[in-house]
Amino acid sequence: MIINHPLLGPRDAAEFTYLGDAKMIHRPDWQADDALAQFTAYGYLRDNPAGPHRELWFHEQGDRSWLVVTRDTTTHEITDVQLARDVARAEGRSK
Amino acid sequence: MSYSGFRVIKEALTGHRGWGPAWRTPEPKSDYDYVIIGGGGHGLATAHYLAKEFGQSRIAVIEKGWIGGGNVGRNTTIIRSNYLLDGNEPFYEFSLKLWEGLEQDLNYNAMVSQRGILNLIHSDAQRDAFTRRGNAMILNGADADLMTTEQIQKRYPFLNVNNARFPIKGGLAQHRGGTVRHDAVAWGYARAADRRGVDIIQNCEVTGFRIENGKCLGVETSRGFIGAKKVAACVAGSSGRLMEKAGMRLPIESHVLQAFVSEGLKPVLPGVITFGAGHFYCSQSDKGGLVFGGDIDGYNSYAQRGNLPVVEDVCEGGMAIFPMLGRVRLLRMWGGIMDMSMDGSPIIDRTHIDGLYFNGGWCYGGFKATPASGFAYAHLLATGRPHETATAYRFDRFEKGRMIDEKGMGNQPNLH
Ligand SMILES: Cc1cc2nc3c(=O)[nH]c(=O)nc-3n(C[C@H](O)[C@H](O)[C@H](O)COP(=O)(O)OP(=O)(O)OC[C@H]3O[C@@H](n4cnc5c(N)ncnc54)[C@H](O)[C@@H]3O)c2cc1C
Image 1 (cartoon, rainbow over the protein chains, first blue to last red):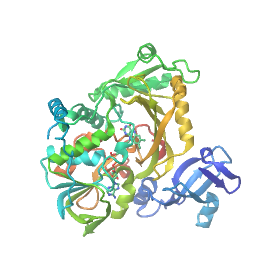
Image 2: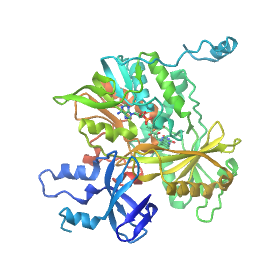
Image 3: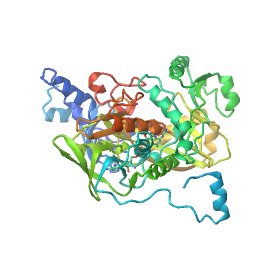
Image 4: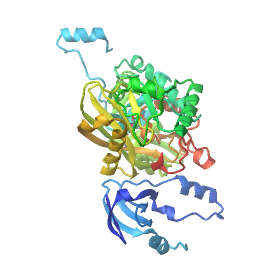
């Protein structure tokens, strides 16, 4: 697989390590009443879809940026790559 | 019809006209006591033990393709019970004992071959860890043997014990481990279950569940609704896709694992050998091909095919310990989709929906578990209580902090 890095251009996926579902960008609120249930779901439960999946890849052997890659899990085709930082900001995370 | 040596001779003398199909092709009935979803090794074993050990009837196994077409027919056929943790080791040892009596139980030649498995040791720290694991195995009634480099060299003279980076400093052997003809396991369980009246329904996909007032009443399938008192999901790599239809999110990611087989060779490799410094394991099939594999690719996938970096990694691992592999030509490679759980251990449990049960999260090690998984699942379905060796395989262990994490990797499926 080739990941089209927004800053560095096409890079071999072997340079990256994989974390998983990009929903992990959003940590639950630790002060919420149901924080235990929310953190259990955050830490352990996954949608695991067959089809398009937004997921976090880390360019470990490159510029060490985190990317949000949209990839079809049934074909491995990559349709979108963005810097995770930009995605997080656009989705309202402060830091 | 029972299979026996006598029968083979009789058929040989009468032109092999007496063999019938090994199982029926029934039409689905409108309802059953038990509907098992997934005709892989685990689903078929569950049906067999439900009928045989727990005296249950009105059982159907529903398979979307053909039985044996999933991971049970794609794996590298290794069986062993060399686990460390209390939640796991008694279960896998129970499984190994069931393998030892399987062919008599099923009246089917599954080619169970206890040729032994050897995990190589490459450092002093690893020897300490393997010694501890061996002791845990012995405490749970399994066999374990810490071998020296000299003993290993004598038995496996082709191993490169003096590799500059990964010298072989010993090994942990389990001589009762070995290999089993994988698809014969599916066929053997299918035939044994069918002979006890289980309906095996192929080419029938479960497309949804009928759930009313928190109770599961049956399954919607490509061949219509089938009612059931108890519905038992058992679809390995498709677990996420299936349980989503019941509104459940699972502690599971689906990942692809590749395996490889070489051209056929004369017997060169007695037993199973695993590399301890990278991920590579190898055995020789009875047809002569070297069967080997390594790491999962490491990203969510339902594609049943992997990518080249893992191929390179596996072959490098192989060359590090078996330099003779360099001359061998690869014949085939393939991938299967595994239900990688958050702690690397499986789940055999009821769900929050009444009458709906779940078996999954087997990662890349579910083949060896097939008999015990079927037995324990049948126990849970028939008695309502978990089998004594499977009490730790609960859904709520993540929330309660009781993970069964053999390698201490944390909640990261691609690290297990
Ligand atoms: C390459 C590879 C190597 C492996 N090597 C080993 C090994 O050496 N040792 C070991 O112990 N384990 C190994 N494993 C793991 C092992 O194969 C699996 O954990 C195990 O086979 C899973 O259980 P199963 O046999 O029931 O799965 P499967 O055979 O996959 O059965 C699941 C079935 O469910 C069916 N299904 C799915 N969705 C539906 C639906 N909606 N409706 C109806 N049916 C459905 C599928 O068609 C499939 O037949 C390996 C796996 C792979 C891929």
